[in-house]
Image (cartoon, rainbow, N blue to C red; front, side):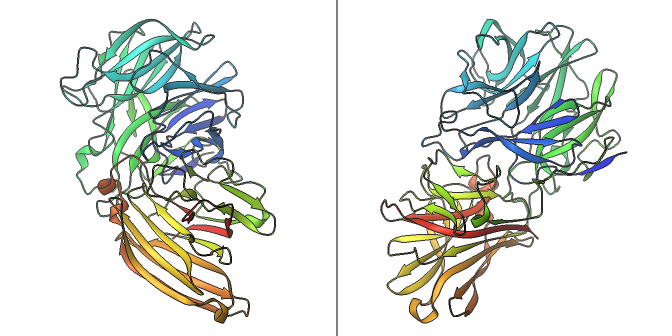
Length: 530
């Protein structure tokens, strides 16, 4: 029996994947930067279908993110399993640096972070040798001084797991496969057939991204270059190739003895990437002691045949359509994201009423914790909708739906009251500056008996455009629908314009002119790929 995986296996904002296998089960973790909770844990039994079973960093004590930039916070994690314990190692560039957390169950709970003194740099990984010793491997600036931007070295040092301390000497073992390479990073250490392998990314997480590998009979080197490097890249395929930025890979072996690789890549539309870096899969074979990725093809493929029986999770994280009736939920799913440290009062769920989102004075434009609850954008064309009760929208309060790239680049659709009028505004924020692209008075509240409103946000087509529409439903069963704006260019919400490392999220939003104890109530939320 076999199953076909469709790339990307984790569509949308799932960058920097790391994978491990425990028997017949596979687990992936990904970067989340300044989103909370941090580091999703994905589970699969066939490498093709995935479910999110939790988040590694789900308590604010684990994940301080105060005032961190959108693309700061948690960088590339690594997940490993050893003798009954799961380990995740990661970098919080906003606080504390490199740390390790542990769990007996990958769904959690995970421990508080053990911050590693002397672990400079980023992109840490762990390796457990045959003698039971654990080693830290990561990347840091050239110890002799950087000769150019991106002049980094891969380094190794033993990690005492009992004390969670680095011990012994630091060994700078590798600085990339090619001459004057920039950003050798994301290293992982493996052992196979008596050889130690270091696989890492080079060229930066952009158009020049690549996967390279070296090996040694001695864990601490010297390491020899694979003359077939890079073993995977798309940088030679031109700027218009539909899949780019390929790199930052990790290897996994199945119970059948077959090997696969996960890595990040992007799928731009007309040169613009709004979904960020996604997780892809490739098959790996070994020839002459070296890994060969997708033999005979040498690049990523749309489908990957896997010699495992097909498995269907209860909640597929790549589902095309998801609808949330908040009045029937006891808790939000693991897939929901907020920004930085939201606090316990950000939202509540009330049976029969919905999701109560706290009116906060912090806006999406600040490096703060605004009232924003979201999911990842996972399709080039999608529609998201939220049903919002309007009776809580008194003067000075706004609520609606937002498409978020960063605090400086996002799109907001807000409902507000002006006197006895209900008004809708569509606001595009670029470089931190708001532009009202549409402002419509929906009508007199008493006349239309309005007690709730549904706002539909749509992103569809190949021109990276948005259509925003609304539907007003009154107590007298009167419904009004209209388009607020259409063909609105949102290429500014792309990595190429906004910069950074994140993809877009879409979700519910509330804000007030001043602190208050009231909430905006959302009855339901839906996301659908088109």
